[in-house]
Length: 328
Ligand code: UDP
Image (tube, rainbow, N blue to C red; front, top):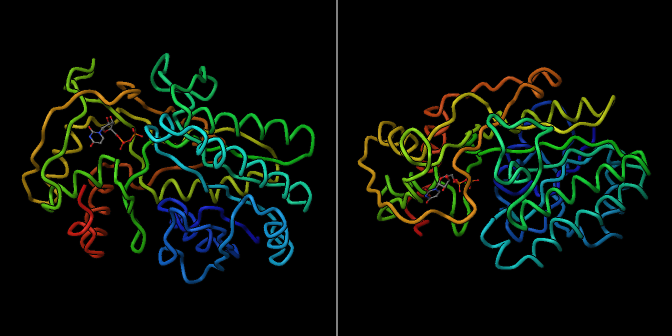
């Protein structure tokens, strides 16, 4: 199939592109390179530099490459930034997304897989979180992702565009070629590894007074390769129906302290830590029920063990030399 991947030069997008190519799909990356990295795009993919708000160019790209399905991953994803600058988030995550949907409708492209987020649930009512649980985002980032899910439902009803929305939990780890390279870095695992490499002084633990077994927040970490493979399965499902799925491993999850301990074992380094205030908007525990995606898509994570996730990220950082040059 000919698949357009928006945001395919980003961290998760570049691994999704590797997996669509492995599955035999002709893959076209559409990215404006505001956040993405051109060199992360698999050389077997076709790269198109473009903006989603440029409707004529987007539609021309659909025609030129005979696009049959879209994986929409282009978005901003920093909670704090979304609170400080909601305009940026609504413009990119909602307005640009609607431009994409309109271009699909007008070009007869009727399948889309969307990168959504656990942030749509806000402060969850229970664990593990199921897809039908209440959605009540606590920040503009989550609001924009939920708004786009609502748009998808409307566009399906009115224009017959089928969708799969994948609500990501904590993506981490790396493939051989692609790993996490944000600037600034805010995610726990790369930060912990930077501290292990000595390019960051210490890891700040955002709160150790949560109602969890060791007082630090618990998250559901999912290897980026497992996450990417779910997109390939989602594409196949679009022949039949639409759906919304949590994308996490389930289980017990791991606390911030457990992540740091596992990273110390893997790297063989002592990781200095500092307890600091809670980060606003962080729920104590976020664990997916992954029952639905396992049963309906037949998705089974291969790298569920936290050490495999951290090890892949560590190896990637060492290969790239990023541990040495991405402090703070
Ligand atoms: N965290 C932390 N120190 C950091 C970065 C993150 O203690 O420097 C915690 C954060 O509060 C959360 C967990 O690690 O409980 C995972 O955070 P991350 O930003 O990686 O993902 P999120 O769960 O926010 O999507």
